[in-house]
Image (tube, rainbow, N blue to C red; front, side, top):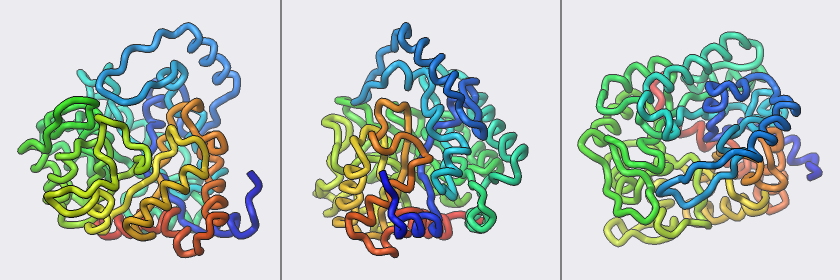
Length: 363
């Protein structure tokens, strides 16, 4: 897609924040690195392997992943050269546990954290670990990429509340309590399963995150868990990556459905805390569909409550005109074509995330 002069300028000048990636998973798996390009030869090799790979059944989720995505996750979509090419100022990198890592979740989480720290230490001229808003602004001023460490599911912490303190010291600044499965803190969004909300331990975790300056992310949590967090929140919460226009039956109630108890939609509830809803790229047909999602969020809650959370996870499920992080300017171009003003575009690209981080982070 051709990028207009206005879109190129806006993208170049803006702080651009991507709210979610699982790139640490293929990094610790030895598939790719965080900071070097994913070679075409490796892409071809894994494609050949995928042709003979029997994908395991995925229980309680409303989607299927192709064999290549299961083997390589977002390898080739989120490495540092692509972030640099896409003008991304900061990216939230998640500690996520597939089923096969659940019996050693803490060890895997520490391995992922160590991989991130090693990459940053080895490339100080190109990237940094952001634990403060000042770090993100410094990255922008110096032409670097800031990495933000996050949890996608709190299985590494389990029932040990004090481990939140340790991960905060290691750089953790945002967290979901669950992925799609149930854990000790809460229910995730299991498909066609009667789900509950936060456990007592989950409520303790939310309070401790607030004390530590860790942003609560409600992506992948059950509907009851969502409203439990809304009740506990004393500052902005966010949903880093979701689709508001394509809810899956049995997975999550529609984002525009008014909850009879609270008298508002989930988008409105997040906005009331001062938070945002990040549009997921995964399983979107194209950039135009992404902007349709932004339209829906902005219509419900205003331009101060929309953001981006790519969640690239294989090329087959990426938008056809937005296959990797290097193509992020396509989003800015689509927003320009849709008629958004400069302030709205800057908010969506990153200023909304930055406002939330300024309110929650302690450093």
